[in-house]
Image (cartoon, rainbow, N blue to C red; front, side, top):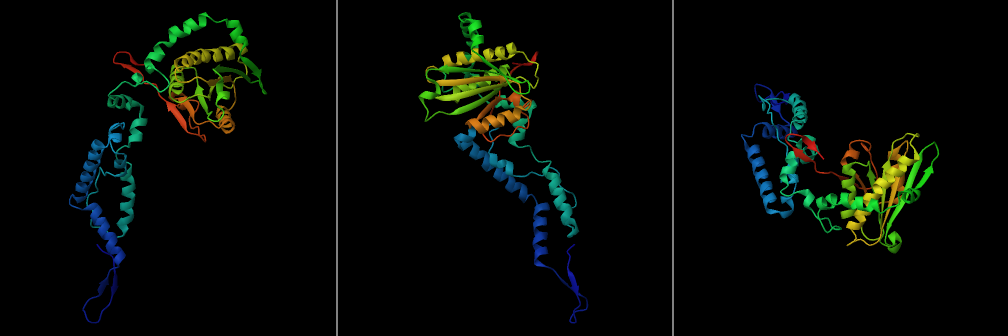
Length: 338
């Protein structure tokens, strides 16, 4: 029913109805939205078919996670249509807008929502027609899987040639204000960052000494660092003030053996590199990271997915954050394993 103003007219028996142009336009838009005899769905299907054809034609879209054009997320789909639409007045306009907002919640999930769904990891992995572990990173001469598999025998041989007392004495241990402690050691390859002062870059890697953090360290060493760069590896050992000196030194040496192995793996490409290993306790680890980012001005902050979901949850910093996810091995009988 259309709304108007009734004005008495002397030439006609009854009153005359005057309708505003704005109401006519609003009524037309509502009619188009609610009762288009399938024209809206037809245009939508055409747009989606054109988007699918672009995915097939463009090379850079063929390797997207879900093989879909990102612009398709901008198209809204209404799953539930209102019954009895097309015969309402201005009082129904507000109801139409409210229903539109409610229908937005029923739209299809975006690519980001599908990727962020942990239960959907298996479907995402199926879309890749290759094993991520077979990639050869720029600084490596073999694949990531080969680097990780060869790490155990290499580290065992490396530890057999070391004087552990001398190694433990080389770790700089300090007691900070408030009862907190810090262990620090510089591992240098070649001439270090001093050989390339003009092109030197800084990187920060957060680790929790897990296997996924070791994978993140392998990825950073294989793809990010170059000659003359400095990598800061930070391990937060909690906010307790009762940790012993030996535990900090053990944490630093545990990271150091993996760093030495990766330095040997990148020796074909990288000649000069500095790696600073830090293991410490701090009451506010997020504040500590922000202070390090402000002072060191790194190119990026790298960490594993497990850290983002735990201690670094809701963390915001001023530099790009690289989150590295290790692909899990799935077994039907045993479930998910590393």
